[in-house]
Length: 306
Image (cartoon, rainbow, N blue to C red; front, side, top):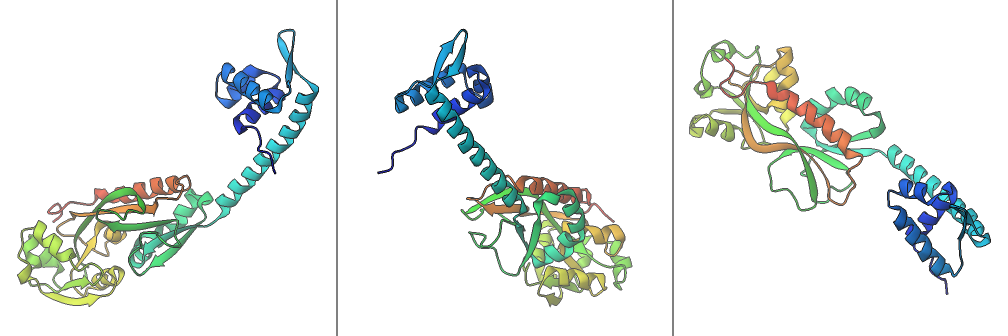
């Protein structure tokens, strides 16, 4: 029958004391008190039935038993430190798989990917497009980036990044743009409104925020994904409804205009991770994403642009 090892804390206290030849220095290294180290050494001596140190003047010297245990424990702890360091290095090299809805990946992440990788080179980020809703386990992912409203699935730990804001956008190429730029939000009634199956309630949410009647909306072409919808708006095919973050680059370049600004929704942009997963690799990414998303809060609020 294999006999149990002595308590690990006692072995750590002994190894540090033997290596540093000082109880006080061992206590400092282990972030405990002098008395705590002394007690752990006594526990170890009682377990082994042998004295490990003897007093010599004002200091301690190892007994023959102590010398033997010092050599063995030093080698064992060195191996453990080496193994842990190798595992940490392996974890750092393991790809961090981030799931993104296809539209977010295409319109927002990819244009920022080179800069993200330059600023967080240790992350080893791999992006995975997501066509369907994320499951509670976030299967196959280290994290997911998405816009959603609480409550969150019980298996998620969520890092909020920014409020989602939506508003109508249109191209300078759209035939009615000139008139719409000098009109109030009710001018959208009767226009060709583009929409997407992935966000069926977006127009309703914005119309309610403007106190406009939904029954007077004239819906035109529907698109399967948000990025299709935005590209259709850029092409001048009608007025689209889109999140501010997804069109910020187009607004900055003049490819799209937002005559009536953007309105908060109940949703948030969040970074979600499985609740069982460690978050040490995640925090730099969460901080980076939050800064990017909140940069778009400078875009005008509803009724703030004419």
